[in-house]
Length: 321
Image (tube, rainbow, N blue to C red):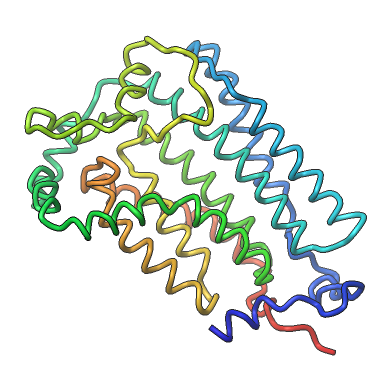
């Protein structure tokens, strides 16, 4: 872990700029692209509002948080220049905005999607040799495994926070930007596939076998049936089945930590376990994971050329005296 600690060394003197800034480069690498995606998704949400008639309440808290964080970012960018801290708080604000408008987009997509394709997805699983009810029954004999799976499946908020901290303080130039834009592109690709292949998930499809439905099913069915009360923003749940966005995020979070010793293995192990937890903890078919992995790879292919140019792999080196 000594290498990890070294990568987090900040300048000993507050008045000395970080080495990247001294060479005329910025650790933030610009915010235009992720901000542009957020605005695009927000505009799309507004247009779809007219089509679906969905209503959302609870705007005050997330918008206040975004405003507060951006204000701090301005201070650390202009008044008390600390590029690492500016990057940290600004990208935290952008993540809040992305999660806010991205979640709304998912509800619109489900409301507008066509006939459910659960039978096709269950048939695909059988062709892969995967029996979802048997998998669930088998896990009941291993309560400790279930606890570990539940913990890793619910780790995404901690992975977001951890990634923000690691990528900002390790001075991996442009890596926070890369991660967020990858997530944004992946959400757009996933939304297209969900619109083409909507599914309620195996918790509902195999309900005759005595399985308990997840709470997101109530929102999912309300959206499908047009009985839509105002949705409270801080209570919204993931409603995508095929592809699994948990699987997408598992690959993208791990990829974002490449080259960061002491952290890449942790993210790889956690997300590896999480992939195994997705069928049971998230109520997904096996093909949801396969399609999620495909979306992640396609995303990296689409964005790789943008982020490959000019990335500084050695920017976490300690400053010279």
